[in-house]
Length: 452
Image 1 (spheres, one colour):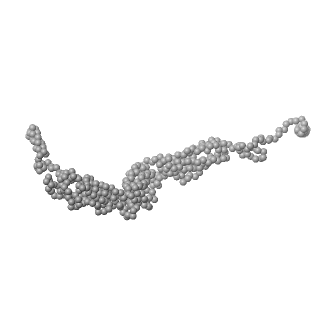
Image 2: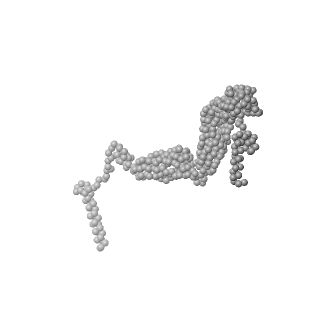
Image 3: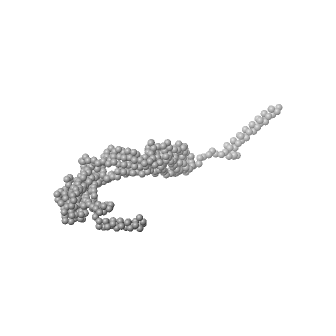
């Protein structure tokens, strides 16, 4: 077949199919391989599935609407109050009355089914409505077989609302992270909650595991869930949560909590700050006490230890004991007394030195715990000489330079002997001269004897 013939045959097939689409019967369409369109449903219900979650002690209303798509007869809906006290059902005037009632509906007619839920306890239940629908022709005569249909309300009474999955994100190994699990009680009575079976590196305060936790009606309770990874990588854990209402009921509802987090090898820095200490001016022999403050400004708990206490002691500086064995919580401070009793005069320019390290679980500790730092505190002051003693004439010592109300007097010295021509001094001079003369004569006589 040439190209011109092929084109003609294709055009003929298109014209034929177009005719089938425009006026041919579905059977004819099926004969040539074209599927027939599915017939439209007799009616539709919106929403397709009605699910109600209502807080205990509350009341809510939900409605489902049935719409006829073609003429039909609807038979067998039930009306009035429900069979229990948790819900109430009602029907609009467009619905058949009672199980044996019927109503002819034209395309576009509606029938509304309403449920009012008012649960008084923790439970789940299902309530349904059954009916038959049969198509009618233009004369109002039933066509085909009637179709049995049903529609149900799935009611769940509720009290607590919470997110069952708690994610912590990335947390360095050995460091603690905390996320909040919020429990919100929508019920009109208090809820009593029990937590148990925490697994993995996730935990809560142990005191929360040995008692029922009360969540007030229409209120909330926040629970801190801690995550302290001891290894690197993605980590998961779980716990059980159950609760009951404090209204004398024995019904209890349970749930499963899931936790996740990632342990990393990066550690936040350890930071401890300390302002300098100035002793001011101190005299040798006196002592002055000041307070040295150390503050943990990091995100982990730390401990500190003194490094150079012995060296400072030789300079007359004494550090007091560290409170709580040097433990400092996150954002907390400790105070250490420090005393300076200078031994010599001069300027003081020294440092008190401490080691600070993060506190980590024993299983997470390495041989060299990461993040140790050295904290130095500048110590300054001026030592002056003690005041020389002042003789006040009564044999006492003033012991300082304070104002005594008296004028200091000089210490008296022995009189100096001066040469004179008379008196006792002159007689003493002649005596000395005579002694020298006699000594000289004796020496001369001794010399003559030796020469002879």
